[in-house]
Amino acid sequence: MKKLSVLLVAAAVAMSASAGVNFKATHPLKANKISTEKVKTSSLRNQTNIRSMFKAPEGELKSYNRAGQCVTYASGQGLYAQQQDGNRIDIVYGENGKVYLKNILCGAASNFGESWVEGQISEDGTTLTVPMGQSIYWSDYYGANVVLAFGQTTVDEEGYFGIEIDDRVEEAVYTIDGDVITLQGTDGPTEIDPNDNNSYLAYGLTAYWEDDNSWSGFIEWNTVFTEREVVVAPTVLNELPAGCADFTVMRQGYDIYSSYFFGIGMAQVAEKMSIAISEDLSKFYIQDPIWYYGYGSWVEGDLDIANSMITVPTGQFLNWSEENEYGVQLMWGSSYVYSEVDEETQEEGYYLGTELDDRAEEIQFAFSFNEEELMELNLLNCDGDVTLEFPFNYEATGLYGMWSDDQSWASALEFVTEGQTYAQEFIAKPAVPANPTADEWYDSNSEGGYSRFYYTLPTTDIDGKPLDAEALSYSIYTDDDQLFTFPYENYYYDFDDFGITEGITEIPYEMYANGYDFHTGYTYFYRTNAEGYDPLFTWRIGIQVHYTVNGETNSSDIVYLEVFPRPTDSVNELNAGKTVANVRYFNVAGQEMAQPEGMTIAVTTYTDGTTSAVKVVK
Image (cartoon, rainbow, N blue to C red; front, side):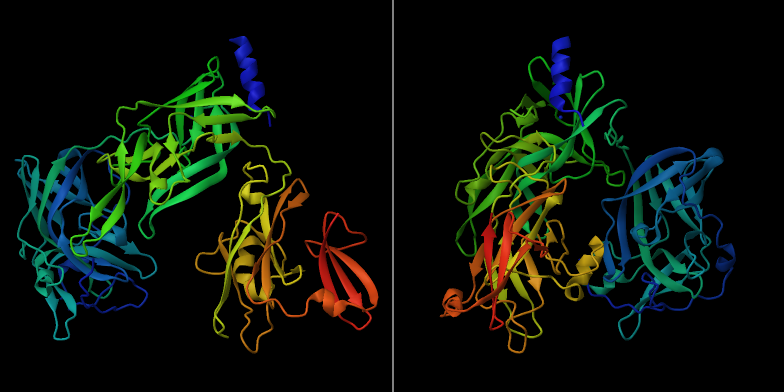
């Protein structure tokens, strides 16, 4: 691949909540099917499939906010009684008074998909009618429709909810008053308490499974549609313009993020990303400029070769949700720490706040070339000191993700520290990885439990330069430099995903199974030191990192963690005076060698049958 320096230097010469409601499943595999009163035989069954559409019809699209009350069903969580406020419905106005309503039942889209039903507007424009019996879902597996109807929810003596279909109702009637459309003929509570069973009892628009007449789990009443302004989707640059030259760089820096499950956190970023330059050398593109948002989209900036500057306008969208009509925008902002006193405990606590800098209309990068003629990008005007004591190390200024709908923080702030580059052009080459740290060993001491070895793996070489995580691996050593083999029969759950079919001594850095065997910070072991088990080790365990590029492997030192007291008699004392039978040499992959070369394990066998192993570096 051409270096960026060649491209740009040449250019310079020339000139970036559930209530626990009961329900019964009539079909175990039909997750959204719940038991009800049987539907009476009626003409509704013969009206099925009047219209069932899953492609948007032609016509003028208008969007409405949906209000009122409803009961919705969530597979595995049961029924929910709730206000409809905040839900949305789309209506397409076609020719000759025909209209088409998308997802006519509140909440049903998540179970039944994006369906449309047909309606008709009266000649005077004051009434909209929707025939009952229309299919809103078809299951090939069950050979059954879910069809529209009116009905009354019920509850039996055991507290199970069901439905009684009103087969007298042949159409839903909505009145039209300007930009407000109101469903007629429903009845039920106007205020919802999801913990009150009475909130689930209502008469309204519903649906049922036609094969056995069981309730679909959805009903709504007091429904009102109010027209809303349709938000025009912004441009998200998901593909580069034709003729761009793209390059791989290694991103560096820190990312402050907020997670639903783990709260506020900070990650040190060291991974590959892509940049590109337009064919005319006037535009610069950065893919996923904020590490936390891996949408694969690009942002565009102006390239000023003469002044070695890149200017990226703020406000560019990194993604967009058509359904929710909002997305994440690239902005500039800060995080700050503040304290508050808890009213109950009267204890003072620290909290993280964020602030958007809406005055910043652009983000600037300076670029330069190092002694190897590799481009380095420097993010200007950012700030942050990760060496400060917690929580003040979380105060920073940098790239800011913002939700477009309410201009709130979108859970990510990326920055670099003083003297640190934002990204460096990456060309894979051999390097010696920095040493890992051996942090902690946990042994359950139970035959039914797991043991865990906690460690921290480096993502830089001994000079602090970032490494390609895909080329990293690690090995585990026990006691006196004894290389541990991870047996296939114990770890096949993870090995199979990587195409590994036998035991291995090196684990890929990126081998990760959520909640199971391998993590980027620790590894499970199935062999413990519990009584009756073959001990994994007797006194210490260690870790070594390998970096392999173009068939050449460099390794860190083996870093040990002493878990149990070292045996009283050292290996040297035990072997003193013994006669050596032979010495064999093995590399870190366990392959035997004729002579020691590089990092080598020397295994000495004595005439009494005992062995010892030592590390030899040559």
